[in-house]
Structure formats: structure tokens, C-alpha cells
Length: 475
Image (cartoon, rainbow, N blue to C red; front, side):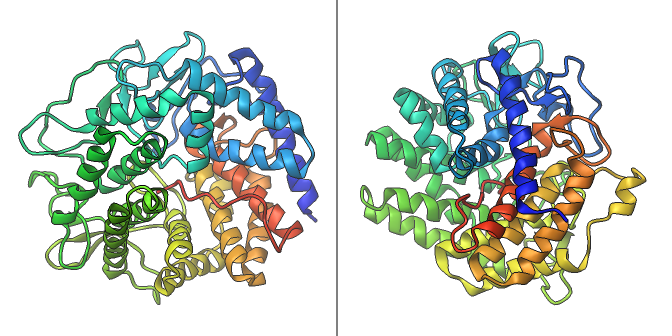
């Protein structure tokens, strides 16, 4: 029987090896590692199906990938009486804040395409590996605790980053942003045939800017907050739903005239979280953010999901609201996540709003995973590879449902899935980045697996008050 103590020991062994590996790189965690030795792999392993080489951080470190792992290490430092863990996290973040953020635009080398190159100690970009022309794409929301830590070590970096977010606006008379921006060049990107202004990204920027504003109430930061907050409001439909992007050509069939419920939900929750930060500084703007956020959440719920048949819609037609793409349970690939992440985010929204329909959605997702077990037979035959993020976020979902409701069914589901996770993903000291591969990789969500395992274990031992907070950054 796998006990919580066994799980925590397994996680601590992995953390110990990660810390040992980081000593060569000034405390930063390499992205791709040998699971037994912890050595950074100098030759890039093959990408798994659905993964893009342009998203990987080979020979580098990516703070956005590592954030759930760092949060786990911080908590285990307390629960396991390991002060060296706190020191390791602080060393990582202090070095990053002081030495990796001094870019031309102020934008950080992290996220979807860019990273910090550990060997050459420079901004790296997986789309442009030779150096230069590095692209910023946020990837996920930066949690408040991480901004607070970075600000402690380098108070100028958050302000510089907030200024750099201006480079996500593209050239043109009317405001239009794009999820990409230059890191090394102070130049706004030209507009292409598509806008690529995904709604969730504006939520990321708003939260970043809101944090920066709490530190220094600069008018230019306030203007950017207002610009990004207003951007999608007039583009919503009557249901409160937002398009996947505001401008798509007819030949982009997968995007043209399509609404994106999960993107709408993501922006809505980011606005609610930002409102909390700004309430004491800008109460009217905070109220506006809450109003918008609640409308967007209603828009997400108005999409043609069918909870009875467990059909969870990721895209629907603008005019008819007919579903045209649904989320699967396992096997996320680029551009198509699995429904566990949306279930987790619904719980984050429930904590902010107490909206029973968000809880109902999360329960339906949870029951999908209780009834439809992990496809271990297919995985063992290597028919397809499942990223570690999928099973990690499912563990997060079970743990958070239990944390909120106290219902033992959810914890039992998490414990059962833990056994599968350890068998398939964690036979070595470091977890594999996906089923059917034999290396650790941050880009495929190994940090979410570690965080999810720790949440399940700590919910078992500290049921009344799990010390490891839920992670809602995968949005």
C-alpha cells in the first residue's frame, strides 16, 4: 500500500536531485534531465506527439514551467523541516530576478517559447535557437506569491516587465494585441492575417499590471490595465462568450467565427483575481473588473456543455452556439488541452464567486475521471503518450474537490490515481515528462505532477487544512 509518507519521500528524493542538479547552474533548474542522475541532457530527446520543439527549453530553465514545483518545495520545507528547501527556492528566484530579467524590453525569458539558456547564460528562444529575435509568450498566469518573491529580490523587475507588456500591442491605428512580443527588440510586431489576441492572455497581462500597480501607482501602468480590461468587453456576444481571436480569415476554419468558452472563463477569473489586488487602490476599476469577470463566467457556462453526457465544449460556433470541438479526458496536445485543467479552474472560480454552476461543472469533470480510469493498457503498449500535466492536473482536481467538499470519494480517487502515477511516471528518482518516455521534462508538466501528488498526500495527512495551496495557473 502506498502511504502519504511514501509519496512525500518520493517527492523529496526528486527535489533533492533537482537541487543537486541546479548547483551547476547557479541554482536554476534545468528543463530536461536524466531521471536517475539528474544531469541535464545535452542532446535534445525527440518530441512526443502533440509537442512542438518550438515550445521546449532544451539547455535552459523556464520559470513558468517550474512554478508549481517551487511552490511545492516551499511548503515541504515547512512540513518536512527542511530549511535547505527554502534556501534553494530563494536562490533560484533571486538569481533569476537579478540576472535573467535585464532584457531590452523588460519582458522575461520564460513562457511558451523563451527561456534562460543555462550554458550560454543568455535569453534563449526555442523558435530561434541561434540567439536573438526571442519571442515572449506568457503561457500561463503568474501566481501572486511568485510576483511577490521576485519583487522582494529585485523591485525594478516587475515594473520593467509591466512596461514591456506594451510590446504585445501591434502596429496600427486601433488597439490590437497579440500573444507574442519581442524580448530583445524595442519594436512592436506587425499585424498578420490573424490577430492571435487570445482572451486568456489579456487576463495574464492584467494581473501582472495589477501587481505592478500595487507596488508603484504609475499612470502609465493604470492606462495599460484599463486598455487590456476594456479590450474584449465590446467584443463579447449576447451570451458573454468571447471569440478565440478577434480577427480570423475565412480560410482559418478552426478559428473563423468560433467562440472559446475556456478562454472566456480564463479571462473572467483573471479579472476577479486582479480586482482583489486593486480594490484598495482603484475601487471603481476593481468593481468594473468584477462585473466583467462575472459576465465572462456566465458566458463560459452558456456554452453548449452537456454535463449529463459529459460533453465539455472547448469551441463553439459564434452564431448558432453549436459545439464544434470538445475536450478529451487524456492525451493533451498543443492547442487542445484536457478537461481536467478546466475542472480545476472552475474550482478556482468557485472559490472566488461561490457560483454553484462552476462547482457542478467541476464535479461532472471529476466524475468523468472517477468513471473513466487512466488508460494504462494503451499507455503501456505505447499507443499514445500522455503528458505528465494531464495526470498531475487530474490529481489537482481530486485534491481540490476533497479540500472544498470534504467528500471522501474525491480523495479516494486521488489515492487510486496516485498509484498509477507512481508506476507509470515515477519509477526513477525524477518523474518522466510523459508516459512512454524516459526523461524528465518541465515543458510537459512534470511540476504539476509533483504538485498534484503532494496535494493528495497532504490532504490525507492534514485533512482539516492542507498547507499546499491549490494551483490555478493552468488556464
